[in-house]
Length: 339
Ligand SMILES: [Zn+2]
Image (cartoon, rainbow, N blue to C red; front, side, top):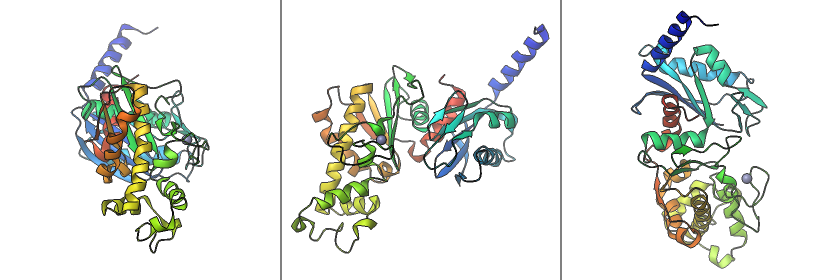
């Protein structure tokens, strides 16, 4: 039984934690880890980025994150000033055990994160998937601050999303409430997705898959139409990259624009399915493909939304938080844990 002194001690401890001004945010991707120290006003005070060490053992990731946290805290700040650690991570996650499970690109079935970091720093640690973390960042510090219904969509190596509905971040039974990259957009199911199913949005429109989809479209295009296009002249189709396709589009290459419009139509199907499912007032968009090619990505979506969407079409914009959006969300979840 706890004595009155224990209770007082615990209250004092809680008060001390609540008075702490800083939080650690972690953006854990398959390629890079980014760590920042931030405050409750949404200032990221110091950041650090490293390649993700995925091959050195299942404990290597938590050790790498611990070291990066010590680096951003440095001499200027102190662990005693930290309220907690928020992690926005690639999945799939095991939220109960605080770990990553069998993620693509990580050669281990179980990578513990929450327990090792809690033990190392004696702080609360929160772990949520990266896109839900991003929408928490948008809601707390970005364009969604005054909105109850908001979706964030990333178009990057893959496609993912996070949703706020009626002022709640949607989680789902396995934290997968907005796995929108695997929405079906092609009933003919021509392209295979990284998840092994066919016809999923990400299989056509993500940075990794755009070149594969464009190669298929090129195979269906008559030679006369291909003549003179930057996508064909002097290019081995195997070497096509998303960047080459968007760059050709920026130079008004007609074939590139035609294909980007096809990709845009599929994006519009995905965005209108999102609108039908979550009924947001605003969709913000991030991820490298969208951040670098904003107009070429967003224009065909805006143009086609009315055709596909039954719900009132939301505003669609590039996120003002840019590539830091997951870090913002990871810091925000420490000050205001969503669950
Ligand atoms: Zn899929």
